[in-house]
Length: 355
Ligand SMILES: Nc1ncnc2c1ncn2[C@@H]1O[C@H](COP(=O)(O)OP(=O)(O)OP(=O)(O)O)[C@@H](O)[C@H]1O
Ligand SMILES: [Mg+2]
Image (cartoon, rainbow, N blue to C red):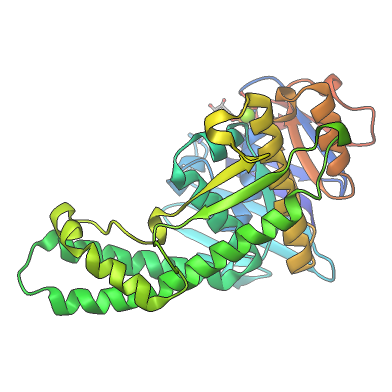
């Protein structure tokens, strides 16, 4: 799929801006602080119905205005899709004129994969970043996963509230929450494990130069020990950690504490990988994310690349640009001279205006 156009009204430093994209490569260039990432943010808003940069929707409204509006036209494999987002004190989202009541209805509607400058955090940071990556990825290929996740976190919150309440005689109620948590939890674990296997199958097909083949393997590290597909086992572990949970006032076991480890040629890359190896590794994982989304949904995802190519050496940049051919790419950079001999549509950004 590709995005044909976007119309920004009072979005960050854009007061009124219409942009028409090419279905191929689009290069948004300009100096720091001019509004390049803001465009990536506006496009990606349609993926989840919220910003990937701000927790609060209102932060995207231009400082001097009361509301913001983003309209976009997408072209899919066999259909068109128009979307509309309005943000003031409330948020309203429409797809083809139909109001979206829950953000879960939007999941999977627009396929996009984003690379931002902090993409190395997938390796370097804590497990939350890796869970987010998985959650986002699986939701795009299996919308039911997103529903499970919302349910899981709802039940988890209720269980934690109960633990914190320190009421006596909570055993029966706790048992009810444990039942629910383990039913949904097992489904989440299964889907995470399957998604990781899928990435493992696909990631090593994306090989760079043959002299230096790096075999990447991701190992799921679930918080539930033993058979995480077995509800009884899940329940038992909740039961076993109950005393500790009560003491801490939070649930210490379950998919909300999952992680995964990434190995390159059998070496744990977080502990021993070089900066360059980490970059190759994440890029390949993200590329395989695109391939799997394409395979599972039939739609080529839109690639949003925010200022990442400047960090790659010549060889990696060439490799990467070669791999992202034949799909829509929206790429930001500070210097357009950097990399393009190829055909692409150029947009120069200056102080919230496109030239
Ligand atoms: N709500 C807002 N209202 C008005 N302007 C805003 C708002 N939020 C951010 N900005 C402005 O947007 C600009 C930053 O835009 P953006 O992050 O897109 O820059 P950039 O071109 O990607 O820069 P860099 O090259 O440094 O990454 C800043 O000047 C900032 O003050
Ligand atoms: Mg930026």
